Image 1 (cartoon, rainbow, N blue to C red):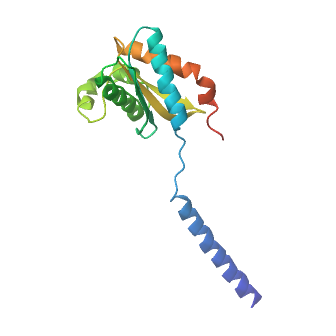
Image 2: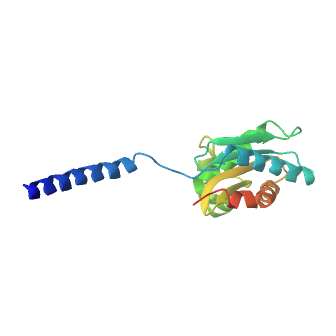
Image 3: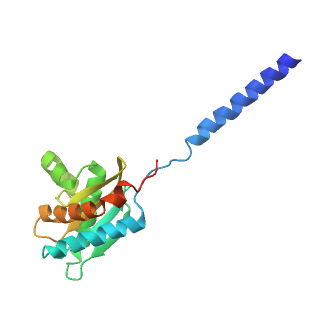
Length: 169
């Protein structure tokens, strides 16, 4: 009788544990950029470009390509917002800076430029925190993607302390 109860208990425990393991796959936890940090990155990017005499837009997207912050300098063209978003999305899709991707994959540039929400141009920079890709910043409006990227890099360097320690392990 005692052996039967132990077997029943073991089978019951096995059933509960198998349910827990299946339930663990039902919820996905991802590390992604928050609104406040996104806003500050976009703002610092605009400030960096202003210091260089450029009027730009900066768009920060999370690791899924969703806009977390979008800022347009007072004198930047309205089209710069869309271009900046598309550069950031390209960075998310490729998980590399858009300029590096452009240089490495010129063979498929035209095809990718026809996909809604993407553009293969320099000016998208990935945002990494604690080894995780948490988002990207796209910049448009400076006279050249290299200058767009430089403004984003300056902003990320200025906020590097916040970015690096934003993720708790």
